[in-house]
Image (tube, rainbow, N blue to C red; front, side):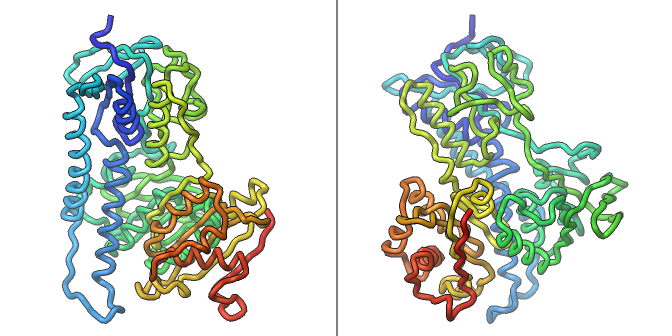
Length: 488
């Protein structure tokens, strides 16, 4: 017998799990939400919110110390502990709002819906029951008709490298430092590694070394996007080790020694700190999913179709699956899982309209296909690229190093396929395009829409007009506006 029985049991109170619990509550269900750590997961702590707060603070500092805008700030001081205290205040605000809601929802409403929180580590004991072990040693058994596995992920370990949490760290530890290191090597040139490179380079207190196994950073993005970011990094003094193999990395006293092999030969380099950022792995190994009939795939990912696992009453969402590990995707999957569990005909998630922001220098925003994906998938497309130098909002902000690139199908009615924006306020452009892609909209829909002025989104509109042959800026005059017609 269980201590309690629920309609839906959600394992993990990160973005995906929290969203699942709230949607199940909407549908009148009695929900158990199990969390072993802090509510909000990596969506708030040592992850999305905390790192993006740090990114904004780094940009604020970089702007305050510029000398090319008609003003000069003197004696601008920056303290890592004070910066981190600001980050923690942001995190506390976000976590506090989630916890306040859970406190209110613990009381059943008129329909009997409630969300009860259990603190501890959950493990399946059979297909319809979990045991939750609390930190005080107590163990409770809970049964449920449906389960949602949303236990998130953790930084991937690097073979042969010991992470001590102080000298050699992952993103879980970096916020605990007591000062800006004088130098740091970042192992991994994906989104997270490049984001931390941008943050620390913006503060100007840390010499950054970035190890990239590939010929260029951000290998999943188009060449022009990666090149623009790399150029900005190198202008800020970041050293990019391209096509570099890490031979060894170890902490020696209070510094790090690493050895790399690259086309330049073998190098031994000494820095103060090291950040390991080579991806994340799902937190599924200790859940006992095999006792519930759930199949694990490569790397511990749960195999699921539309969130449904091999056990139809158990769903997997967010970072526990092989899908893209993004907060917005996790939330959508969590809500979809709750709806399916509650017997609704849940709408499909249109992953082709997936949007994301990369908090780099400059900012990068994406939605839908890029050229790399289109070519790989054999998808015909045409692409228009407009330089930031021809976008009045970028000119006004004195930040024109970047561009807007729009992809569309080559044949009428020219369906919108994807967008990449590199530059300030890039994220302001993507939601409208995500909606249009989801609805199968065309270039003419973008052209005819009234856009605000001056705004970065006008660059998207001009790209649509370039592809339609009716642009305001003519490619015969402005070489910065590049029109490419490419068949994938």
